[in-house]
Length: 109
Length: 115
Picture 1 (cartoon, rainbow over the protein chains, first blue to last red):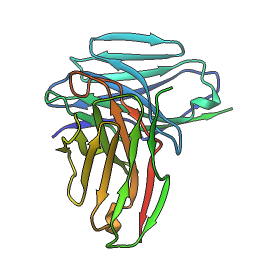
Picture 2 (picture 1 turned 45 degrees about the vertical axis):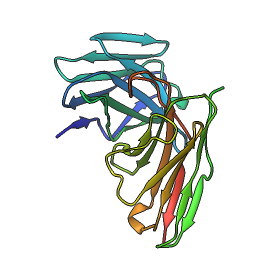
Picture 3 (picture 1 turned 60 degrees about the vertical axis):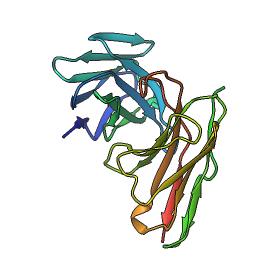
Picture 4 (picture 1 turned 90 degrees about the vertical axis):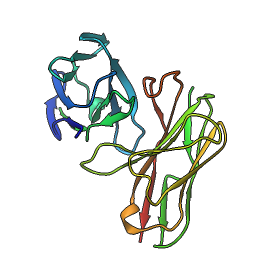
């Protein structure tokens, strides 16, 4: 079967750095997304990786290793507004999106 | 600013009732999707559409149907609501020549409770 694993919940301190991991076992790979979802709101796009390596976008970076079936989202200089759920999704060989259950990130002052 | 609008944020229905969830996007996107989101589970695809009048079953289509009469509007229909359909329903759209490689734009969700 196809599977996306993310930690259920993480806690970090304002101003710190946090890394949210995503491992996947899918039938093929055509890209990986990260979305952010604040409680009660729509998910919003953060990043898309299709090649190995690190993509940096401001305070957020996303890393991909296709050989390891692994990605992480790195959030720097954490702010209270970063408290949200972070969803990892993989496009498989049939171009179907497979979603992880999401990681709830709690930021403490 | 791009926008996906879902008609109802909160609905409470009784078992056996017919439920319509409407979704409208103003971005001229070809692709539209209906997902449900439940605690502890990833988003699950109910139905999707890549063109007007076209629909495809997703992973969990049982108990649901859809309608896409106009490009901007994608409706989800529960013919006879059941308690196990209590969930958050998310509509999304995307613009992509290759399915699913484009960024998804989501509506804010419709939280349905079936009593």
